[in-house]
Image 1 (cartoon, rainbow, N blue to C red):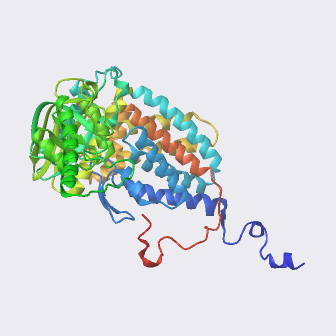
Image 2 (image 1 turned 180 degrees about the horizontal axis):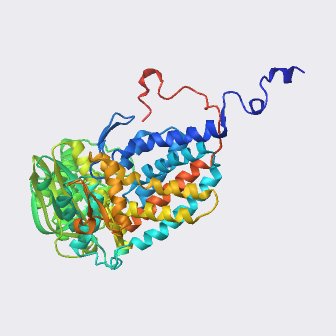
Image 3 (image 1 turned 180 degrees about the vertical axis):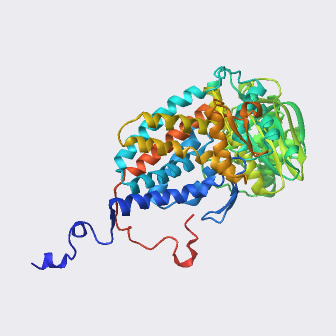
Length: 548
């Protein structure tokens, strides 16, 4: 009977291995989960909207991020709590799908869970809340369809004004006050690379080159690519050039087989090195004869090879990153050749001009392709510090992603919290018609929408209660498009302010956050196994430098 005696504990303790943790019931599991999610959304909430505050996040590799982009913040936070992780995943899904609205997703889900906590304290069962929330989100999506601006479903994606109109709110929420400079840049770049069928727009074709110095107004769009390095040889500018791309590097190739050469006299040694020179010269001459004026190498460029390139007036570029090399091939239409040999005519690429320019002390190589079917455009961003540049880059990314979404679905709805207040108003009316306990959940869902105008107002330093009540008053009298004008701190019809949000952004953000909230509410027990043994990674002797 020794065996049973040693199994101290009773109930679930006796079933699981020691060292596990087990939380169950409303108090322990559900409300703790809700708490964790509310903490997370409290972090992102203050950086919602144009006046959002920046966060300084230092991740585990000591890299500093200064940003108000929610997706970046939660990605770098390394959230440990399992329930809060669900919100992070929802935010990430939104970022991958649409590229904007991750903040709305996380903050709104946190708000929903906060309201759910109130309902649970009132004595509702989580499953009733879930049913109510599900009804509410379905109703919300119906109402959203109603709010779509008439005539916005067909747009010309190559018309710059229409593009900027839809992109402004996405860019302004990252870089308020600079959207008028940034949007035209991003729109230009996107329209240049937009394929015949806009639905196939590839985000990767708009590159961002960040160069320190100058200010935002010095930024520009280059048709083609901007490489952040200098040309290798002495030739710095070539016009209308054919381009040969060698992935393997331009150098004398070591032979495949090992061989020993026995040399008896000085003459033989001289001849040996002469033949090597002659071989390299022959290869370079072959490339030059094929009509190429620029050689792009994916690896090192040998000294001797460089010497002959200079002699045959070839410009030499070195692109060490494989991805850059691939994009370069896309820009110029070249085909990368593995080893140094004479390229065929169809393996050569073409560029209007390849030149080395100096932008603010950094030497960059600009590859331009003005005429033909252009496939890559680069937005050259200028700014005073690295963190500003990173933030600008995120804003540009958001703009480009918005462009991609609007190529698929160009419908727009009023921005500046007009949509949210209208949704809150209509959902409240809807909840009054419902019978049963889920009407409380629907009413709370409706209240959660007030988070958006409240947050926008608070971040701008306005009085939230006044703003919300006057918004409700306007909407009650039928002005559906009244939102907050943050600059004047008053409520205005936003169609005059030109603040529009994309329908898809809102649609997915609300959908994902409702899903995430319901997922968290469905959990009633947390059972954590004992963490696997072995020394902890962060408490290693010797500083643990060999990890990465």
